[in-house]
Amino acid sequence: MTENQDSRSHKISKALASHPRELNERGVDKKMRLLLLGGGGHARSCIEAIESEGIWKIIGILEEGLPNNHSILGYRILGRDREIERVKNEQQVDAVIITIGQIKSAEGRIRLYKELLHRGMRLATVTASTARVSFHASIGLGTVVMHGAFVNAGSVVGANCILNSHCLIEHDCQIEAHCHVSTKAVINGGVKLGKGSFIGSGTIVREGVSIGPGCIVGAGSLVLNDLPAGVTVKGNS
Image (cartoon, rainbow, N blue to C red; front, side, top):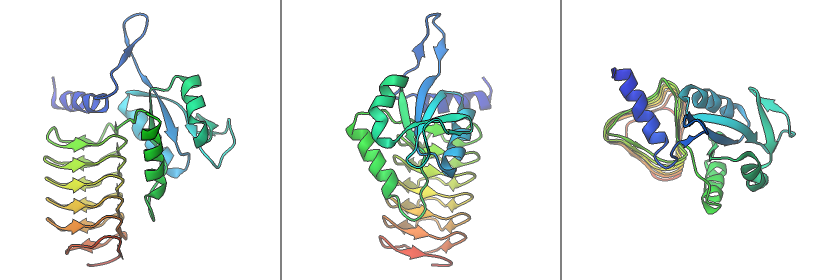
């Protein structure tokens, strides 16, 4: 087995840890049926990552702001969030994933996450085909790792996070639940990122820094010192 094939098998085993594959009548593995919650711009990026992974069959999208049968990249809007039980049963959904974005606040994603757990829904974890997650790192349920992102050894990423395109999570980081690390952000070794925080595109966080829950760090920032909970910063801090 080549290094790329070995890495691919590792990604699949992580994504399927709580969602074993099913077999069709010929005994051949079939893709699991995945429902998306949210149909905005972030959903388009998620669809690209999901399709590239090759594990899931997207059966449709729930979206509050678009009419039923409207389509996004060829996938139909099947209803509203409140109709999830009906859609799950009608479409034989195996797992769901939250595909609304997160910039100013994580509240929308957290609300949906809690509701899905309350309903006993299975949450998918997605790792794009060009992303890399170390064998010695872990990724929480509902998290999406976009194209080109890298999670290094010893890092722990919580549930319902967005690791956006080409971001770097260096060794031994703790990324708590519901965080969004944006495109090309660099989180250096040993950083702790508190629950529900947002790190803007191109930001660099110095090694060992602790960022409290609910922080917003603007694009292109350089974070050299610890940040308390709930602050918004941009530039050097």
